[in-house]
Length: 253
Image (cartoon, rainbow, N blue to C red; front, side):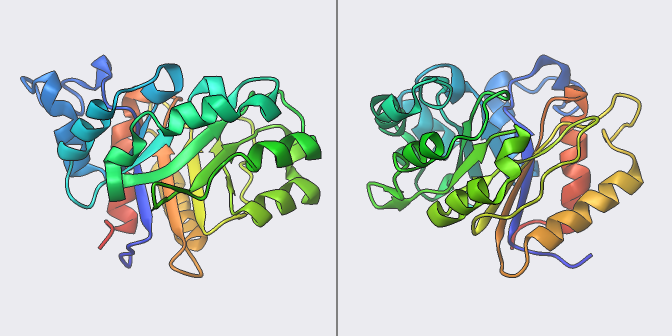
């Protein structure tokens, strides 16, 4: 399959005990796990930022501990993305963005804003929230992605707002649900939650082939930037699934 430089594939986080001895070699120190994971994958979604504020020194360490061409996705603070009063989220958004993200420099990839799964589309609420997301941070361009799973966000009014702001609607693959694949920005964000324990690579070979084909289609015309993360499901299989997809689509060049 032809290699492309527009698709990045990875996992959510890197500190997960079941990966030791399965993905991470026996004897690898925990301090070396990020370096190992980033040498084999092409991106990682950082989840710790969703639960607590990180320090600039931490972002700097993540930058310095990964290859030059590596990219992180950052899950935005729940204090900013999950509050009921989205119009009042401005201080929390500013606090999150000012916590040290700029230390990642060019390794800063998309920012994931995860809304509660039961939240319905409200045009004023969505527009007000999107208006709070700046296009850059200290001159560093920002790419925003919104995870809004409720079916009401599939309507044209919601999609039009996302297109106007250049915000990607996250495509979520999960059991018993058809993943939404409407492209609303020059970048695409996928969260793949369908891995299963009985498959060594998380997904059956045919499913991996299908997803690899979908990722390439989403990268066109372009190159459009595509970020895909294998998370949840049978989480211990996530690295194997990510590696299998990278083998099929190629590494960024």
